[in-house]
Image (cartoon, rainbow, N blue to C red; front, side):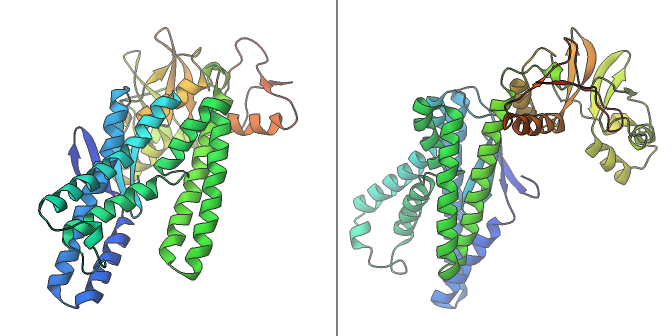
Length: 385
């Protein structure tokens, strides 16, 4: 997630803190300052905050390590004020797999609470029955309750919480993935409105949670509908073929000239007759600001973006975009570069399909070799039926 701070790497997964996580830290420290008005109380609050931080990380690793069992890697884990987000390379294809990945987070939180409960019982410190108030509770009692609250909150049936994914996974077995996502997204939007309304009159923190839930539900629904629109459609349908390659030794100014001519925004980089990378518009601008127009393309091109075959489906292309983090893919047919595919291509295609679907029509290729071209704002015409 942009703007996040990396704090370490565990089990091959980077862990980050989003700047908004500091809202939670400041709020907890403020609460503890009001309790004691002394440094010792604030320090205890800080230690408690760090303990919660560790528990949230363990919760997210429950998701990440379960996903790894199904061959799905996790790019990173980011901590937010209301929990964490595990950025999986892709979501599991089977509902049962998504259920297992989603449920393991709350299972870990409940497990931590259970262990703390046993420790409290064995040490005679007492657990919930002896917990008269939050301020009078011991460190372990409060940490136990915090994990119970974390698990319970994440089981709410709304995206992007675990409960939303669990709900969708169970529902998808009967009504299909897309319809299940629509239902789960509606539930999420309803909860967001409810939390927002309550938060306006009680706790502003609930308003932040409401925004988080609304955005998460909307994004999940958009992604599900995009996957449906792309299923079974070959990459060749939206490949840009009217492209100009550049050399790794060319200066960035060469690519800038082509951009200003309106020919294209992203460039395949060729060296000794073979594809060695892609210079995206984002990297071009970054190179200009860092090194200027004379810097070689080789210093700013992307070397790890995967290639895809023209006969592959757009759904598999979307998965490659998600797994690699690249927004541009080279389309290669038997080691021969035939064009480029960008996330913008996919978005445009989905918007056109959605607009035409309302009229009962779809986009069809004009001929077998019909592929997308970019020349200024023009495109090779397609047949619309």
